[in-house]
Length: 599
Image (cartoon, rainbow, N blue to C red; front, side, top):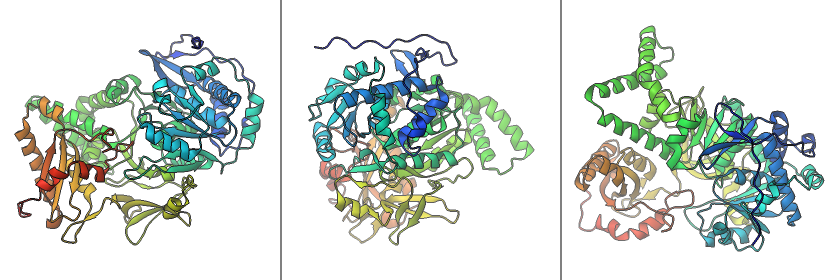
C-alpha cells in the first residue's frame, strides 16, 4: 500500500466569508496565455488566472470550514494534474474518464485533462458499472480519474488515478511538464474536441455528445452578454458537474465573468448554505423552487390569521409592484412597507438576502411559483437548452421576461419551429455530433440545425414557449393527441404531489400515476383519504381548463417514488415513461377495467 499523500499546506486569513485561504502560490513556470487560442477552455482560464491572480475562485468545505482556491492556486493545480497525466502516458486527443462527486478536485481534474490536450469524458457517480463500461468502450478511453476506490471499481480500465491518492500527489508538488503542456496547448484549436458528454436518455443506450472548445466558450460568452453578471458575483453550485447545465452555466460561465463559486454539499444542505454563503446568482431546477415555495406555504398555513393576512397582503403588493411599468406613489409606499415587514425578511431566510436572480432550467415551472418569487423580489429566469446545444440556447433576462416561456435566443443562436411543431436550433453551442454514431447524428443534426425533440411555439414578441416533448405526445384510442407535460405540471402544483405521470397511449381516456409526498402529508396530519381528496381537488382544477378528451378521469396513488435503481429514472432524474408503464402495468389496467370514461 502506498504511504499517505502529503497534505496541502494552508494558512488562515480572515475575510468576510471567514474562509481559509491557501498561502499565496509560489511563482510557477509560466505558460503564456497569449500563446493559447482564446476560443479554447484553457485559453479562457489562463487569461482569467493571469488577470485575477490571488482573488478567490472556488470555495469548498473541508470538514465544517470553508476553504478558498484562488485563481493562482487553481492554475497551479490544473497544471500539476496535466503534468501527472502526461507522465502517466496520456497523449493529446486521448479520452480520459472523470467520475466523482462535485468537488474542487473534480474541477481542476477537468481542466487538467484539457490542459494535457486530452478530452474529458464525465460519468455520473451514480451510474451503474454497466453504463460506465459502455461509455468507456464507446469513447475508447485510455485513462480515468475517480474520486474514490468505490467509484474506480465501476470502471473497466487498468489505468485509474484516485483523487485522494495519485491526484493528491500530483498537486502536492510543482508542475513538472510545463514545456510539454505549453506545446500541447499551442496546438489546440477551437474546433478540437473538448469533452464528450453522454446523455442520460430515457430510452436506449447513452449517446456521446461531442462538444468542441469553441462550443463551451462561445455559448458562455453569449450568456454573459444578456445577463448582467460581473466579477462581483458569486454562485452556490450544487447540480452535478457531470451534466452540462452546472458545468457550463455555473462553473465555466463563472470563469468567463470572473466570479466565485461555492461548492455545496448537496440538496439537503441548500437551506443552510444559502443563508451562510449568500450567493448573488444561482442555477437550479424547478424542483428546488417548488420545495422552497411549498415550505413557505406550509409556514403560512401554521401562522395565526393576522400573520397570514399580512403575508397575503405583502405578496399581493409585491406582485402589483413588479407588474407595474411605473408604480404610482401609493403603490411605492405600500411596497416599501411590505418589503420592510415581510418581503425582505423572507428573501433573507430563503436566499441569504443578496441573491439577484435564479436561473432555472431542465423542466417547466408553474406560473404561480415563478410569479411568487418575482413578487418577493427574487426573479427566476427560465431558460432552455440541451446537452446537444452546450446547455443554454434561450433565456429570459431581467430586461426581457415573460412568464411560461424560456425567453429569447442568446446572441448568435437561431430558433425556428418545424411544420410539426418541433423546435430547431442553430447556434455556436451546437454539438459536432454523437461520438461514433453517424446514424443518430444524421437524425438530429441536419444542415446545421439541431432537431431538439421538443415541441414549442414562438410568440409575437419572439419568446419561445416549450409545450411538450415530441416523444411524450401520445394518441388515445379516440385518435386525440395528448400533451402530458402541462397536465403533469398542473398536478404537481399541489405540494402533496412529488411526481405525476399521465397515461393514455391507445387508451379510451387519460389517467395518471401520482407519487404523493407522504412526509409532507404527515407534517400536515393528513391520512391517505385526506391526501386523495386534496389531489382529487387539484385534478378537478386542472380538468376545468381542458377539453373533455384530455381530462384526467382517474388517478392511482403510488406508495413510493420512482428510482434510478429500479431503472425508472434516467441519470438526470427524468422519468423513463416506458419503464414506469411496464412496472405499474397492473395499476394502470385497473384504471380502465370496468370503468367509464364519464366518471
